Length: 121
Image (tube, rainbow, N blue to C red; front, side, top):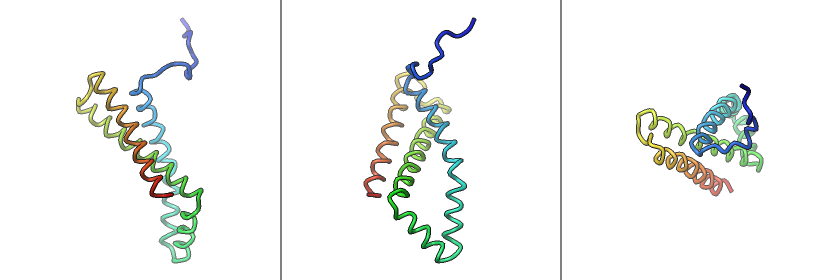
């Protein structure tokens, strides 16, 4: 029998499922951003002119937004990873506790992003 309901955007997923999917997506984003981070590190360590170029790039508005996005992605991945680690250790596996911890992941990552956004602006 074929599935009847295939519209994935109309399915209401619980917060734990959303956090789990976001953990995977942010992990992929962090891996994809690693070459850029390594390039900027290499450029900044090559010479004082390279360091000045990287510093000038980080002072632009686009770079600040990019850094804020990277921090938000990292914070979500970090807090979600801690949640998954605790779930693997059988801490908070009951449904109400799991839902609470998933909500706290979202709150914590949002607070970190807001705090860094205030510092960057």
